[in-house]
Image (cartoon, each protein chain N blue to C red):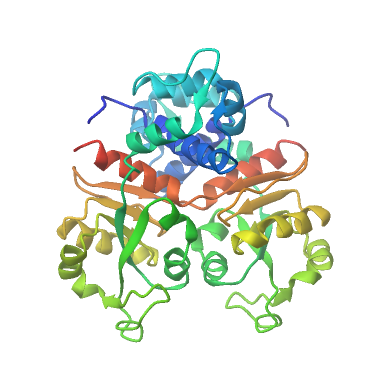
Length: 210
Length: 210
């Protein structure tokens, strides 16, 4: 199902709501008021109602939201009611950290392949059981393993080349950790992870106090 | 200077504007129209005007923004017209990746200390010249080096304990990479980096197409 023109910020907030709901579901909370949910998510209740209104009617007036039901619906909306197969290029420190990061598999994001261009690394087995392929094997391995999301964990000067290889192999989505801009043609999608954005929030918070 | 009640989303967007402005400043663009800037930042022009309006008047009607001037002002607002000293706990794969990440120093965030609890690692010298301290030395080293931002790159089960140590050492800001919730008392600030939020954006984008 395709929803028309949903703001990117709404999707990011739904993602955050799902994390909060998952946490309180684990704490066996069955029902949450929109005020309480808003407080936990650090937004106002009207924002939550507006974000959800794009997708239908949720919650019971005077009661709130059924936690598991809302979590299920948000996961369905985001496409998280299934697993996503990821391939990573760059098995340096960052790549290794990502490959063993607990949150990915917990949220349904599974690494199915890893690549590097360093002959010292290729053919070696990773702790999770994957064998590191040479980057030149990407077209074949991407097809065989069905990579849907390409993760780039290389130095900045390699990132666009790697993106091009993912695109040529018809991997539609790219998550870029390299500190550089990546360009992809229409129909493909790239998200950049910039560690420093959160630092700017901290810097603002404390510099504005003085 | 302290501005009253600025939404967190505005600060995050200012941070993004500054990155785009930095990029086009490097390309020797002197003036940018608010429409062009909005396109590059993937927001609408009214949003940029609103975000900036909290802090004063910027831009020239019919001309646009002077790139370097606006960049300077945004950096001043965010507190990025100075350097920030960071200490990191956890020198595993993620910690090593962060310590060598080019974007931090480029944006004025400098690592001044690194800690671990593994005796195999402590006293070793890192590529950037820092010596890894034992975590028990944090109170002394934090004071000596003037750590302002504590970075947590440990497994999830250690994160709250490390946060408590930073708080006890009066480090006011914490950037948490561990996949868990961290609680800090009033006056302290924590930002969590969650790699999977961006993945949810990609998942939504492609699942809603089918």
